[in-house]
Length: 442
Image (cartoon, rainbow, N blue to C red; front, side):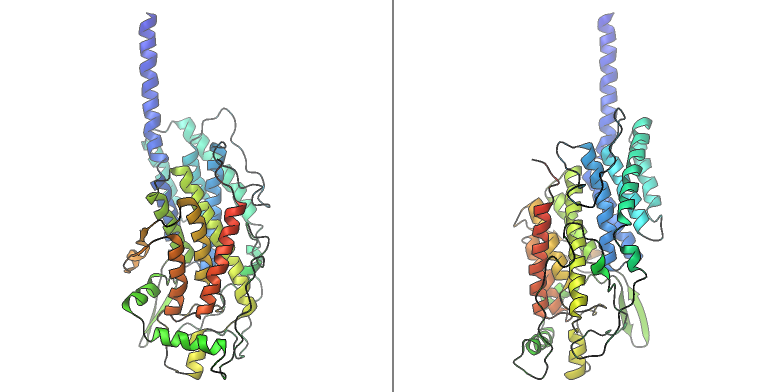
């Protein structure tokens, strides 16, 4: 009789274990996290978020997801509370309650993604799909309930913290004053849009002590009368390069364009086309890295989180430099003094030229990816195929960042010096993120 009961108990144990394994195969799949990040990326694209604001959307959502992962596996992952000095301690799970931390991580990401994007609730349908997926896979009702409750507590904690980053205050800050003075930025065709986010340098940083911690040298002084001046040579270099681009260089310019809202002008007709911005592109590249290196769910969340923090701080630093320098774009100078009909290959974005945003944020992100995935990791980036642009292959993440920087010169929207210095400063920011943040415990 005892042997019979033992056999029954064993069968029940095996059955329960199999059911648990079944639902965890679904909720612990790193591909599901990649899909979830891409879902937010699509919402950012559809709602035309500017690049700097998009970086804010990604960083808080990823941090919320990561804090759940760290709470669920404290022997391998360390909370960002204390590492990011102004992040308060994250709520801890209640003892005795079984939680699927990976499922809760997904929900926390979506909760914050819902809150920081508009229209609010954009991810609600997807959240319902995630919940149904977990139920269909056999997640027990108590685990489901506990996971949802814990995800909500962490997400609300992160949202409360996010509201202190000065974002709301910058919504009502003074607008940029256009000063028509040689060498100073003014709006460019075809949109002639007002300056984008002139106060972004006032947003609270994550790892940097302040927006100005990583300093950049002053840009070359405006001088179009001396043909030997650094500024004149940089202007003529842009004009010369754009006029003699190879097909591959044109591909580079378009591949890294990442213009979230491009105004197309054909005769008297104008229409806009949308793409994800630079931060969204690097979120995609992070996903490629996690898949290529076969990272599990928790490691994937950590990689996305570090990259998003680097992107966020890099944008703040870059925008501080941009609006301090207020440098004129090549298009403005060339149209006024050299060729009124000259146009860049890609559309000039509505903010000052120095330093190159793509160069800074790409280099910063590449440093975190290099730390997480390794140096000289060759990969193919097909992120742009959904916009009709063929993929490109790279020998490393740093090589991709360097190409992103020079592509802005090929596109005709930056001087080379702004891209070279931007790449250098971005690497410094990425290095700082790598040094200060220790997400994985040895």
